[in-house]
Amino acid sequence: MPRTPSRRTALQGLAAAGAAVVGFDPFTRSWAAEATSADGRALAGLPRLDGSVHTDDASLTADSDDFGHIVHRRPAAVLRPGSVGDVVAMIRFCNKHGVPVAPRGQGHATQGQAQVDGGLIIETTPLASIGPVRPGATTVTVGAGARWSQVARAALAHGLTPPTFTDYLELSVGGTLSVGGLGGQTHRQGAQVDNVTELQVVTGAGDLVRCSPARHADLFHAVLAGLGQCAVIVGATLRLVPAPETVRHYLLPYTDLRTFLDDQRRLVQEGRFGYVEGQVNADADGAFRGYVIEAVAYGPPVGPAPDDTALLRGLRHDPAGVQTSDLGYFDFLDRLAASVAALKEAGLWAFAHPWLNLLLPGRSAAALTESLLADLTPADLGPGVVLLYPVLREKLHAPLLRTPDDPVAYLLAVLRTTPPGDTATVDRLLAANRAAYDTVRAAGGTHYPVGSVPFDAADWREHFGPVYRRLATARHTYDPRGILVPGQGVF
Ligand SMILES: Cc1cc2nc3c(=O)[nH]c(=O)nc-3n(C[C@H](O)[C@H](O)[C@H](O)COP(=O)(O)OP(=O)(O)OC[C@H]3O[C@@H](n4cnc5c(N)ncnc54)[C@H](O)[C@@H]3O)c2cc1C
Image (cartoon, rainbow, N blue to C red; front, side, top):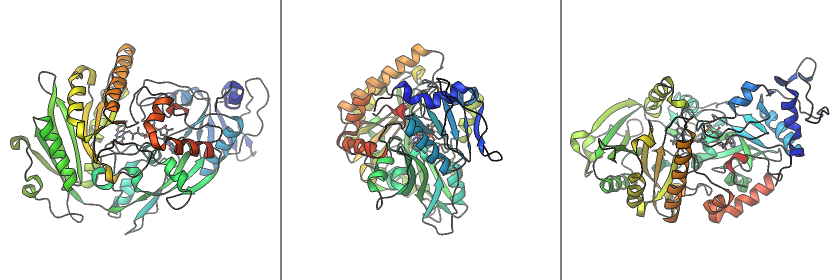
């Protein structure tokens, strides 16, 4: 639905009022600061909140940025909810006034997906409850703002774990469930969205709804990997499985792309390891033709003590370059923490991240990788990495997580890092991302929507293909005024 400026005056009014904090004062039972609309009228009907709404410059500036550091859209106000009821109240308020809204987890999207020009940001960080986790539990219910590191720690205290993690743990549960949540465990356990039994959401109309495969299934399936288009996730019930105490971690080097891909395919189809990923590194000539399989075997109590001979049998890596290490399970999950700290220390975390994330059909993964990486230079990757690993389609069940029509798909992630001030380079890399996407799409591949590929509504319609109509119907039903998450550009 098109939005006219008059529909936005409610929150623009908050910004125009210049109130540092617009919050509910429990003693006077009134708003701590008076807000007026942009045309000077007093703004009536603001809901009472347990938390607060902020319009100060620091809050608005912080939420006008993300991990990409490429797109900047300034909201009119930021909600720090004190309760789920606050999310309901403010979405109802915004729905009534036609104000756009975007939930923001950890802000690790790379292209403004969690930003909203002149609207309301709902920071989900305060909604971070976890549990209780009971010994032997098969699920845990968490707030959408909980980070996966927090969920992992709470579950591991009882010898349990969610089955699938992203590589980086400091992402919010709501943020990854809105995109899919892929990692090295996905080939056995599915994506994070495949391991949710129930969601608690607030629709764009402001209704608090519990949904699951058995209850409001249309909403459940429209929210998982649904890019926030129908509802804000406020809570999720996640599957838990027994956790290994320790794991054995292998790095297996390859010099030939096809051998590397074939061995990866063999490993995921046989399910020999609990986790399989891979990286492509540049050689001394700057060509991306050094390949490494990263594989992890779970130890007791989940699996037997890892047996190197059995686990590596028949693989065609260079045996001289194998690296093996034994790690605690959480240390393995949290393996990026040290490098992230180093990147932050070096100022590189604040660089622009025009990331490219594509799912390649297995049948053409080698040819596509060759052609895409032939155009990549170490300078254009910067201090980033190239990931390449397979997922099995039979394990992926969320309709909105679009994957190639092939039993095996390979995630190719070119995680570029480049100085943010050099906008000409950023623009060139974004154009390169788009060209790469067009090449992959023509071969039946898909976009994994966490990166920075310029996309318009027509691209999204094509991306969702046979499920687009279902998503559009759910959007119409649950967010009839179309206020949610404009930064994705889907509608
Ligand atoms: C260092 C790093 C490593 C990563 N590794 C992986 C990986 O291994 N595997 C993988 O799959 N992805 C990975 N990602 C991508 C990541 O999963 C997504 O970008 C994810 O959306 C980020 O979570 P967030 O909490 O920062 O979400 P945000 O950036 O805050 O939000 C992302 C989108 O989700 C929406 N959203 C956020 N919270 C909610 C909610 N509660 N309800 C509805 N919509 C919501 C936002 O409006 C926005 O559109 C990585 C990203 C980074 C920066």
